[in-house]
Image 1 (cartoon, rainbow, N blue to C red):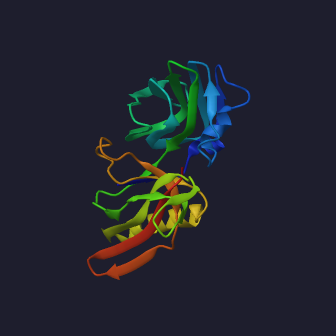
Image 2 (cartoon, rainbow, N blue to C red):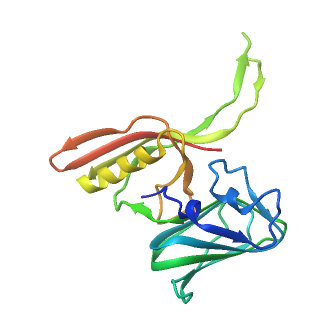
Image 3 (cartoon, rainbow, N blue to C red):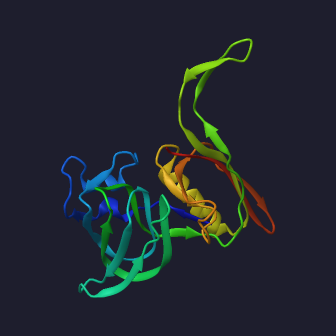
Length: 232
């Protein structure tokens, strides 16, 4: 399981080629995914980080890309590594370890004008533990029902929402999740990837905490529980 919340693009110097001025590159780290970045069918996005860092996560969400490669450079502008993103998913995530990164360059292509809701570049918290979760689909439809079960109302949206329980955490792991809650609260969205080894069945979710964090301390480890809802 992975949690990705500290997006380094927020403090980076960002540029993009072929940018639509009405949908600027800064939109990729806005909390509202539908406030998108747009460009023509090819765009090279360059992020000069404000420090030399180690990275473990790149996530693209709410996009229409047909290809995307991510190149990592050090402070001397020497190429360190290149990742090829699997863009067949609406939320495309890749994890690994790249150290001493000063610049990140994403080369993006699409068969139509590019549109990207969110790009995350940063570290992810990794927990080699299976989380117990109940993340059913939830509808925000407002429904009126007559006595004979005729329905009318306002159509809303469908999201995933539920409770996540993570057992047997070390004290350090528990504190790292509590730090996410301190930073994001109930307002700021982040990524949670409950099935990070395979996205065939479930992709990473982008959403917010919707409850306090419950902590149960036991001799063998701490158990954390919280509610989460996808942001649509």
